[in-house]
Image (cartoon, rainbow, N blue to C red; front, side):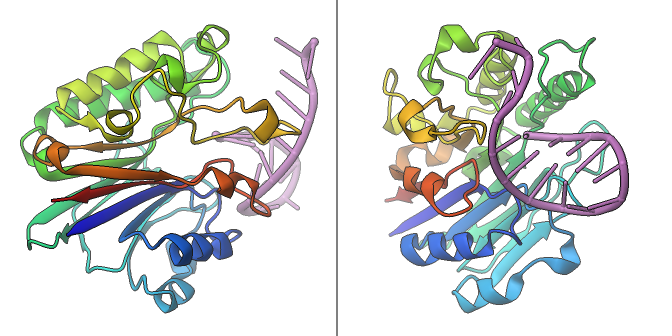
Length: 269
DNA sequence: ATGGTGGTCCTACCA
């Protein structure tokens, strides 16, 4: 009895629909959460996904930027859309599904702002937006702790919180995604909601884990200057069911790849 | 070394 939930920042679901289908066909997760779909709702490619066995889908898109979606082989029920910082940015959608025991599991799919290049809220409004977004997420996490006990939170959180989540802790300390103000904020959000970082539970430090490698590198694999920006957290009642994970590093080497790779968690009991 | 590459959608913005 198991349930596998995956997350992948796809960087345009329309351009890379064939990669999505390949991942689903070869790996068969029950649920796949996508970020950066960059796809208005009316144009979401539901047809080929249904044909591949993923006939249940929720999507929240917009033109050009952002966008999240949840694809599933099992029936889904929409369980809300959070907005942050008063913006309709399509950065969150939630779904409910039933596990093999008929119990409800809620999946929160999240795309946290990248935050621009300069880690200073006065010089860079995008960094300020990221910090404000994190503040609101912490408040939500605190208030929802009980409700989220049987929830899974996945997505591109755009922060690599631990030393071995980046290729060089020292070189990255002043780089957006690994600055202390960001890593401390993410750790505070995790603590406020009593979330367990499922991937780090399975692969403890100091083992490096990366889910993203920049496009701006001629040989990403040899240089291996990656970051763990994508995460899967589980609520307190699910922590005991963490059974295994999959990190498809090979997908970074597929033709016309996303700069992120799929990450999956299996819950079982 | 202050670049580099890639997606969206038309010129610049985002990652």
